[in-house]
Amino acid sequence: MANVLKRSSLFTLTSVPVIWSIHFLFCYVIVSLACTAGTKRAVLFGLSVVEAGVGIATLLAVALLSYIGVISHARWIGSAQQASGDGRAERFCGLCTMLLSILSILVVLWVALPVALLPPCAA
Image 1: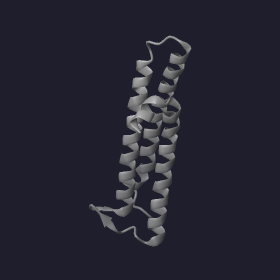
Image 2: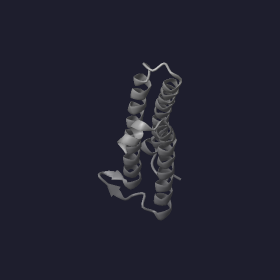
Image 3: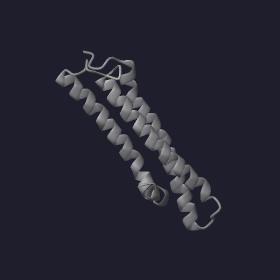
């Protein structure tokens, strides 16, 4: 997996919004299932199941997005020596992927924020 991320600009560029959308979908599904099934009071590691599930998913998503951002930053800086057309395209994809991963980290944290601040399933 690491070799694919280091070689393919298009794969890393498209994997960032895919990670965000999977996180978004998982968070809303786990909250809705916990609220409808009545398991909102179940406890795991001292937290409710909803808080623990969203927290673990958020940590995993932020870790993956950070890893992709670091790889993209290295691609952006590393291809600065190449002034040819292909090197400039690689540098541009690295910059776009790095900025998109930063934005996606902020959005992932924003999605998880209501679970951290509000009680789950508050009616």
